[in-house]
Length: 394
Image (tube, rainbow, N blue to C red; front, side):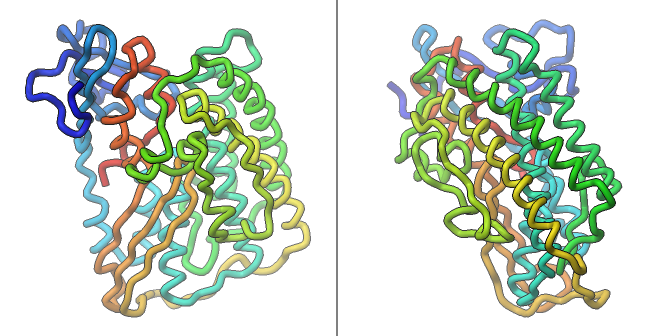
């Protein structure tokens, strides 16, 4: 069997273009017949992979995948270089655009890193609101990836349309708070741009409860998926730096919210009770468990916010310069650990701002995880290892 690290030099047996021709990002236009040996794999109209720009070369023995090579890098965003010519207020606006499933987490992680170097402490109400928004973001992100699972479930209780409506309602709630439907841009160094309007938190709690109900069904559907597809063991988790629901689905107890608490997570309870068999079914089950936990966290945070008043930001000068030095800071993004390595030379712009993204690790692992998967199970395997293209090509 060829090594997954070194695919054979011969032309691959199958090329997989992940995405949708309708999205306009694939080399094969809608309505055209793909070349022989090419599979156009669309995971659904609301799935984050629909943007395309990830290609797989597969070598097979019959229907069994014996080697895989992943091709990324077609987006050419160069955001890490753009950071170097933006001041810190502009950096925050730009940082929420690499994972467009969870844009809030991008700006939050950068802000926490900058505040760490400044020694800046945010007001208590801002701390709790930041935590609430992180869990709202987690639900919206997971709803997108669970969209594929809904296609496997008969009936009207758990459907892609219901998940899409749930995610859209979450975006509308963000718009009510920030004025922006997709990219919130509400984080400021020292807190938030604005407090919540009247009735907003109550609306979020009700939305989260509906999300939890859908997630309970999703957990049942995930448990009925074929077992043993694309198993990831603990050694592979460590080798590829996998985290989040993927690592937890393989039995690795990894969650920064519990083990390295930040924001207000140290005062909250998260129950890690999802499946740990390491296969695709377990990863979907972990997504559902995450969503249920997030809904409960939102309820708990809302109760705490009733007793926490005061400002949501710290007044800072117009031009912010970080002291000379560097820091590394991680957060628990919906797909796993998101890290920022921030280096300052004492200027108003970063000297270096390096992103560590969970999507990159997820996609990199496919070269090994897909070996041994049969072609009929390929869609399940890929759908269980979610990614966002902008989170890969930085």
